[in-house]
Length: 227
Image 1 (cartoon, helix red, strand yellow):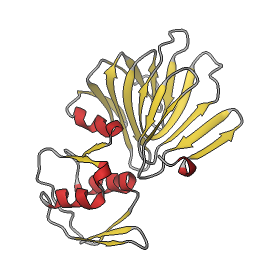
Image 2 (cartoon, one colour):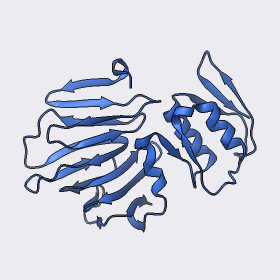
Image 3 (spheres, helix red, strand yellow):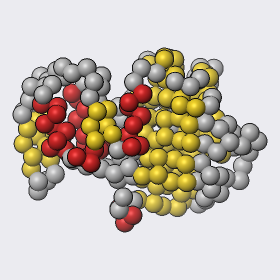
Image 4 (tube, helix red, strand yellow):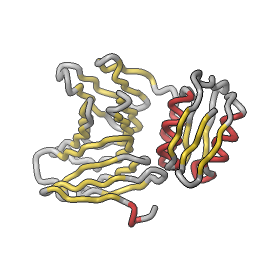
């Protein structure tokens, strides 16, 4: 990634780092925990973990491989829920504007706590997913592990609506999308994975095999018009 485009700032003893749209990145925290940030994601964290718990805050999507330290639980705070762990690997997506909160557990155990109802807690096992649905936490078996391949530069759009795909494209390819039609195209394929490095034109060409739409790109404004 381009280091000069990463937005990093310090407020008191807290650091904040943002992965620009079109790029993902990883950072290693002072305790040895590795965090991968998806495009457009912001991570706030202390320069040094000094308190009883290791607390960070995420806006967007991030994957954590947490260094085990039973004396100092690791807490990921989001707008909707907190995820509390000891040592584990998990993915969390938290987008307040879209009302999305999802946690996927790959290894270890985590507890997800609803910030608006502290009694609403779920302890997860590997290969499980927790969603926030109508303000309540819901536990499911992990149905689509491919969606976690973004750390390898692969975007899985299986099961997404056209509008959701366009929102992903905006972040992954650092473009603006304007949909100039009243009805949204229906996507007809069952599974689809895209290598982000192959670019937006390749992604759109693949999508056109499964959805009826045309598009124009304005290079000067970096805008994609869907018709």
